[in-house]
Amino acid sequence: MALQENLSKIRDFFKSNVSINDIEALLQFPPDTLVGIDQISAEKLAQQEINTIEDLAKINENNPPEIRGIPPIILVKWIKIAKLLQKNVSEQVKLQKKLLMIGLDNSGKSSILAVAQDKFSIVKDLLPTKGVKRERLDFFGYPIISWDLGGQIQYRENYYFNKPELFFTEVDLILYVVDIQDENRFEESVNYFEEVNKILKELGETPPMVIVLHKSDQDLRKTLRWQKNVATVKKEFDPIIEKYEIDADYIDTTIFQKETILQMFSIALKKISETSEIIEHILLDFSLSVQGRGACLISLDGLIFGSYTKDKVDEKLLHNTALLLQTLTNFHKTIGLKQEHVLSLEFHRNGFTIRGEKLFEYSELEIPVFLWTLSEQPELVIEKIKYFRDQLLPLINLFL
Ligand SMILES: Nc1nc2c(ncn2[C@@H]2O[C@H](COP(=O)(O)OP(=O)(O)O)[C@@H](O)[C@H]2O)c(=O)[nH]1
Ligand SMILES: [Mg+2]
Image (tube, rainbow, N blue to C red):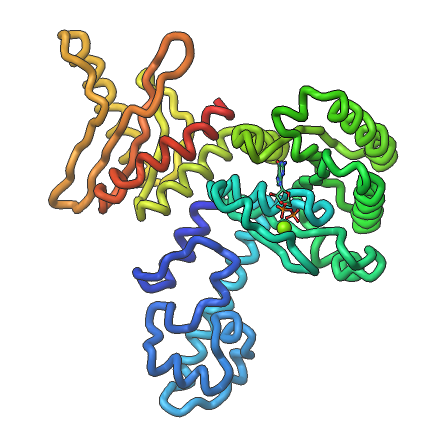
């Protein structure tokens, strides 16, 4: 998979204590996060206003500035590395799927992001987002960028609509959030929706969309008012969907039922990615969070649901070890042993552990599925496995 190869290529340029979670932020790192650049050199670079890797990449390598204490040949090498990284990052960003969440202010976007991030408890304290402040959530390597459309400023003066190419190009999916309880602003929301579609058409972009009928709280859903509002919104949105030939789905959500938010995201992801790719993202996310070399999900009958590893050798190592240990555990069962929930093999001389833990049972046949990890710090895996079980498993289940 290109994504992981690219990521490990980038990783090697950085000092080992530098953690890389957000690919795009990487160019804003200071130069001394790179292998070979010490702090003193970084200070000398800073005196020349070279504060980030991006600054370094901007320099013309054929005409580098003279910096006392840094030989030109060394400086040119750094510039070349920075340029290489920049190229890799932009390729990486292209590989990523970009989701845009838009809707009027107060429609609930920040709350949705907070729920997705499991910050449910602080939702009540959130203030409506003002102006052009954007929020971003990294959802298993799928960046979701969120911003308000409404508020004080009319769309004609709105920054997003003045520079649409900055915000609307290469968007893979749009989540359009409507507050289903705010009858007074349906018209404003529809107008923005049309405006967004006009702009997308001008840019030649046709991302699929999910129209999120948000604040569909459990009690409200039973009421006539809710049914009426849904009907009204659909009646207004449908002609635009038809006119611009959009691939759009409606889904109702509420922050008070977290599963509706996860469902919404899973429908969104399914529209733009293969299931196996999404599971790979989740495993990649987990593996990075435990500083592991790889993770995979394998059923006891040998079905590999998804896998992420740093390279091909690790992939073979992890899969074959997991499959053989699972075969062994099957044999143990035939001679009457109770099934272990954790299987692990320590490679002392190689400094890593391969560990599998039964996470759930699959299908009516109740086939156990194990999460396998290849890690140099298995204690981190043990520490985070609860997180995986609680946070990631419900999501994986949506895709199986
Ligand atoms: N009843 C209800 N209120 C919600 C829901 N989601 C968000 N809210 C509230 O709506 C208000 C605006 O939410 P916010 O996330 O700030 O909207 P944003 O401006 O689109 O980011 C806040 O007071 C939230 O507590 C929901 O599902 N149901
Ligand atoms: Mg907000």
